[in-house]
Length: 424
Image (cartoon, rainbow, N blue to C red):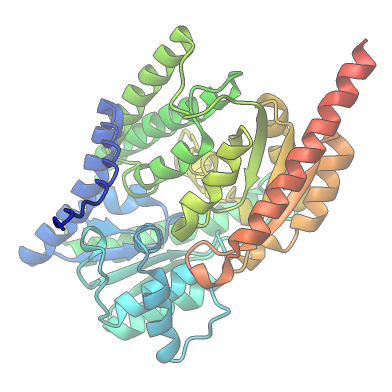
């Protein structure tokens, strides 16, 4: 009997990767250049700093200092699926699993742990810059970075603002700390403060912020020419390179690309937009695909986010710069927080709100239940919350998330049918 030749079906060809747009390529290069500049400075014997994302970047930039951002680094490490391992290293060092995932990843790096994400490896710091307008965890986190590396910590304390307006006494208090930070960084850098250079740096930062906010505003179009997830992917630039002209140029190019999409009726969104939601909170970086999948399956586009435009502040002088740094999402009163979010929901025409109860960010998540109540009462939109984490995948349950998204879709559909019936 003749032998029968065994054959196996060929594996399906992998889908070719879609080529990034010119703006996306430019934005990626901007971030890569920030990390490369830090390594170059270290090799040349110049000091490099680690900075919190809402420390006044204008100061270090004016003094010619190379700076990297542990929050951006941690997000990148988490997105490349090395966050859990780095968090566990920090826990073995004695840091509690209940503290921020960014902090745990960063503290592991500060103690010498090496991430598998080569693009997010950074030199050890010679100085540390911290501004606590984001959260209280930031203070102890950066104190420990400085302790581990035996280097100076320059701290700026921004009081929580119980009022909508920023009081002049707050500005004076913060301005004094800015002035002190300048003196300390002059000593570290060996450079003298140059007021003209500062004005140019501020002009670059404002140009970047305006271009970034313009990009964010394209989500107001219906249908939107992109997804809010695109904004999450581009946030690294506005965090790490806001004061650099290259960042401004890249965001301006992105705005031009989005304008073309609007004119042509096209979008980077890979599915038809049926529902529009606001995503409240920081994304789960290790689980972006899991976040996106049920949204795609139900035609849900994220057309409003709070996290992204929070980094696009514009100012005129040093005092207004101080006021701007008082306006982080976690440093304002709940009334202003509600007002911001409801304004975005109205402008961006959302049908519902998806809330991330982020185990890593308790100051943000703590008042979300009240926020949800306000959104439904004031806007008449349904809300759904899910448990997760910005960096530690152990705190995210995909099945729970999918169930919550499905419930939100059903509620949005009921709302839609009720409005149509009322209009008849």
